[in-house]
Structure formats: C-alpha cells, structure tokens
Image 1 (spheres, helix red, strand yellow):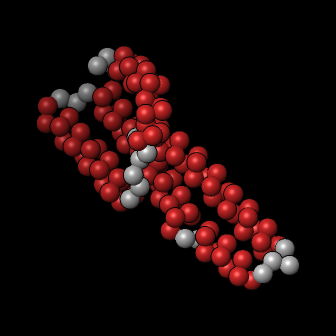
Image 2 (tube, one colour):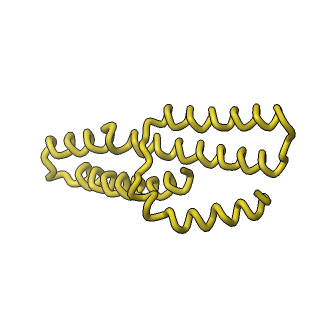
Length: 130
C-alpha cells in the first residue's frame, strides 16, 4: 500500500504543479479575463485536485507508519496474546487510515508494480526469517 500510494502521490503532485502553474500564469497575466482566473481558482482548490492530493499524501504517511510498526512487530516477535494484540492494533490503524483517507488505491498502479513489490516482499520475509 505504501509503494502504491507513493507512486500515486507522484502523479498527483505533478497534476497539482501543472494546475498551480496555470493558475499563477492566469493571475500574473493582466490581460487574462477575470472569468478565466476564477475558473482556474475553482479548479485548483476543488475536491478533485488539492484536497485529493493532501489526503493521498496523508494516507501515504500513514501507510509508511503502519509498515514500520509491522516490521518492528515481526522483528521483536512478542509471544502469544501480546503479539495478537499488537497485530490487531496495527491492522486497525491501517484500516482506519484507509477509511479516513477516502482514497482508493489504483489497481493499474498495483498491477504495474506487483512484480517488483513481490521481490521486495520476498527480501523482507527473508530478512525477518518468516
């Protein structure tokens, strides 16, 4: 999830940058009709551009925190009920982040990254002796 969100974030960052640049050009050009400046402002600050980018960045950070928590959990290998409690806590944090973020991860990005991510996962499993 963290890798997919990171790749999606790069796309969103590019999109926001292009929109922001167009908006700045509209505002800086004195010959621009006011309706164009208003339309550009609405496009930049709409739910589909800036808000989505912020939510995706937040979700990416939450996924990275979850990955680190799970990695530490499997490194420490607590016994019995403690392991179960910590696993459920981390799983609940992951699911809560997905629900609060409101961003659906791209299956197209997943399919493109899946071979490399599978190799990375095999390396992680070997490191953690799983």
